Length: 141
Picture 1 (cartoon, rainbow, N blue to C red):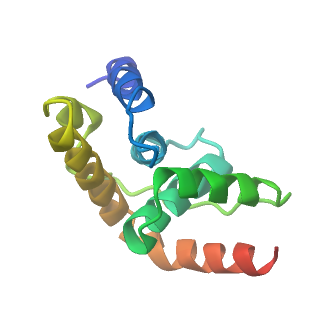
Picture 2: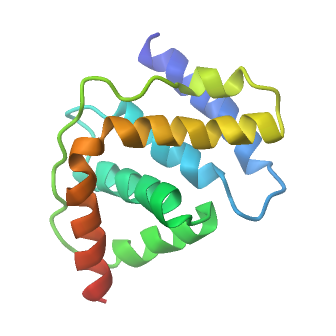
């Protein structure tokens, strides 16, 4: 699938998540998964770092999307050079299109978590780098 088509699917899913009544703000997870899955050599290091931090906090620390968003805001206050991450060739088996193929509601919401897990697993080689970054930034506050 070409990048424009994937972007259109992302917009469609964003419409769903931004209109979602759950105060947990699942839209943040969609943004993080999509950013990490579609990153390329032109993607800014801060975008990849924030996406991976968001996925880690969600999947390993059970942060809600709102909590991830607040963590991103706190991290953005750190003026620093953000590390570069290796971009795995495969970025997960599940795509935004797979999420959209699920009916709106609990099934689609569960697929969003599954998608995030798929993308996070694809970046497993960067897991320790992400955990170290989170630890370093949270102790530097």
